[in-house]
Amino acid sequence: MTQAETGTNVIVLGAGAAGLMCALEAGRRGRRVRVLELNDKPGKKILISGGGRCNFTNLNVRPECYLSANPHFCKSALSRYTAADFIALLQKHGVAFHEKKLGQLFCDGSARQIVDLLLAECQKVGVRIQLGERVQLIRSEGVRHFVVQSSGGTFTAQSVVVATGGLSVPTIGISALGYDLARQFGVGLQPTRAGLVPFTLTPTDLQRFALLSGVSAACEVSTARQMFAENLLLTHRGLSGPAILQLSSYWQAGEAISVNWLPGTEFEEFFAMAQRTRPEQEFKTWVGETLPKRLVPMLVGENVGRQRLKSFSARQICQIGKQLQEWTIIPAGTEGYRTAEVTVGGVDCDALSPQTMECRKVPGLYFIGEVVDVTGWLGGYNFQWAWSSGWAAGQSA
Image (tube, rainbow, N blue to C red; front, side, top):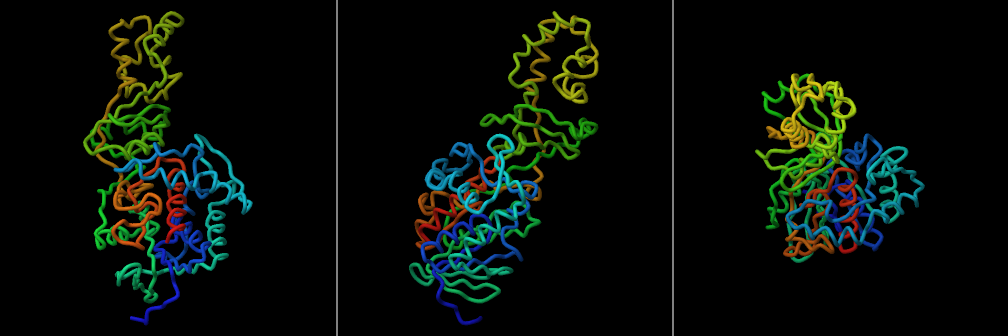
């Protein structure tokens, strides 16, 4: 072990979105900050997000768009550092951006611009970033005195900020260090699971839908607790698309999901009008104007698809309406952390100050970003949580 280096006020574990934001904010306060990053480059998740253009925030951020055992926890940080604040930082650096849909903001150019501006801000305030650092040991030697031993040396600090991320996207080099540290210091954890992730199906259902891989439709998907309206995509492994990814964060194993393939439609009125105006048309031709044609036989059967509209009874129409608007299926599971965009669960919010992200029972120890039990919707919400929680900790650490 090398002799402990002094002169550091704050050690941030992780050079991702939350860690870099925290580091630059603490540095602006005159704190001497050292960032220890496991990977060989900073901001790896930023770089691969949004198809390389980084969906860095959302214009519609609000607390209701976040899932947590403590739904009120995120309110303070999100209100104090908003999407508008991060947009102002981009504008300061001349980064052009655009809204894609539903308030989702992307860089016009590359996600590299986001990483570069964060690194520039860190450099301006003297933040030191060390890459390829594997943390081996952290111990507390009194109030606000921590010793951090890593592969690159041993350091002391008054504050340690854990920004190590979750278990999602293992290809970028994930670490369970944040959860291990929570256990070590007696900080509670909420159970973790993959979020914003596709569903897998049973072998029987996969066989049923084998010819539908690649079919996509706008619909409403729901569980008993949550509903999302966006596209659903059938794949060779199961169900995906934005609506499914959103719902997956709320889904519990063994639970059925319901799909409304004709959202916003009063089906019986819709059908009655078609019977009056095109009575000789086959059902599959008519409904195929609204839904992908390959999908129709799977939903109602080949025989119904060939039936002429004029031949349907009121009872049949009601039954078909339920098949199309209350279609249910029980996923076998999810694809897990391998393809998950986020980790649901993590460090218990009740153990942290919502204003500063500091542990209530361990002064000087902070948890921010994905490692905390705050999970946002798809579409830039999780990056905004990273900026907001990192900013909050940076005002205090």
